[in-house]
Image (cartoon, rainbow over all chains, first blue to last red; front, side):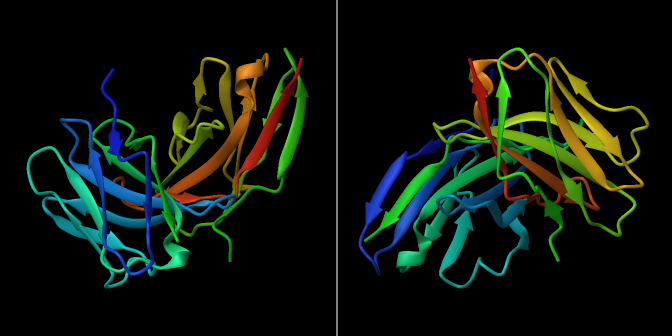
Length: 114
Length: 115
């Protein structure tokens, strides 16, 4: 069964460093999302992406964040200068755009900023 | 105001019993979707069940069913015949308006199944 994959599974970085979180969505899906979950809290929407552009973003998704789909398979989230409060689990999700419109989530990348 | 409210931080259920996890939502949209996801201790998010706002029948998916009461704006998840592997965090989520929009999640309910 096709699945969303994310790398790395765990990333440790120092405050102020840039990180890139990578996702490979399900191959025929058209809509892509990033969410984050601070430990013990609810899952929060960051950004949605369709047709090579951002379709919606939350207040969390400020100028320090960017997304890219550099080729036909990868979908990346970049944080330019990490802060302690960026420590969270980051989930990528994809959706086909047909059917019941469920979003399939990847296993997540745990980002720890020290 | 909270869009999705899950009032039960933690629940216990005996193995093989049924359990209901509560979810209420708030929206002024006529078209929306309601989802339940399971998050085991390993951290991944597993899609369980979906209910569309225009669906007249309650959704069912194996041992999962969604008790959808539109007038009360509730979308409770019912798990029948609980198994030890059902122990996890459960999130209710809503998608407002257009079908490809973002999901808004509740705070989650931790379910523990006792042997």
